[in-house]
Image (tube, rainbow, N blue to C red; front, side, top):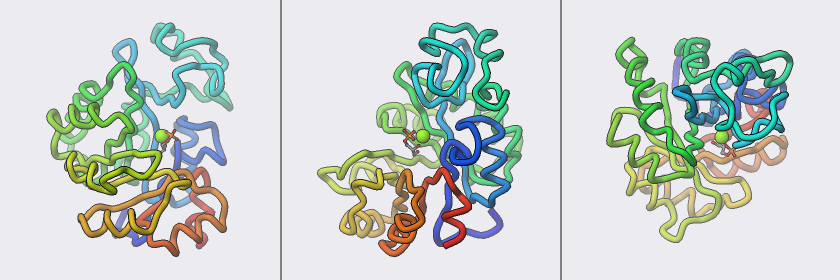
Length: 233
Ligand code: G3P
Ligand code: MG
């Protein structure tokens, strides 16, 4: 990003509306469409960080069963759509080459904070600015662990609902952003996030009217499968 946009368009799982989710093609499509940031999901297994949303391979690949039941060689050979392989975190970062911000979502029922921190430490050492990275999760203890390991990388708290202490839980973690499901967006929550110096983004918004509404409500950004629709506002 050359300048900070007032309404941040985050390509969800790349540009999932245009290409198979969480693939390099999807990420590259999102960047080509002009997304300011790209989001993708990572899971840790067999000493690798795989871009994969589900625990099971069935919905998004030609594999069957649990990701964690496959060895790395088998995972590398799977088709994640349009002949695209399941990328690793390093594959994705090498493709992106700092062109846009990168939101890495920890899908960590078996834990991936330490592996992601080790990987990002290498990229920071190579000159990636921490400001172009964001690590987010619904799993707040994983975010806490990540923060202890690599405090310079900003955190985003994911929440599907309206927390009892409004945006307080993000502040408690030292996160910069609260990411809320679109069905729970709430003007008081937006105001509370802003009063605490936090940004509030909403996922996943695809309908042009909904995108317009989110912007009118004053949210800071949206995760969308169609970055082009959000950018057309
Ligand atoms: O990070 C926003 C969004 O991706 C969270 O939900 O299920 O699409 O990973 P999910
Ligand atoms: Mg996600």
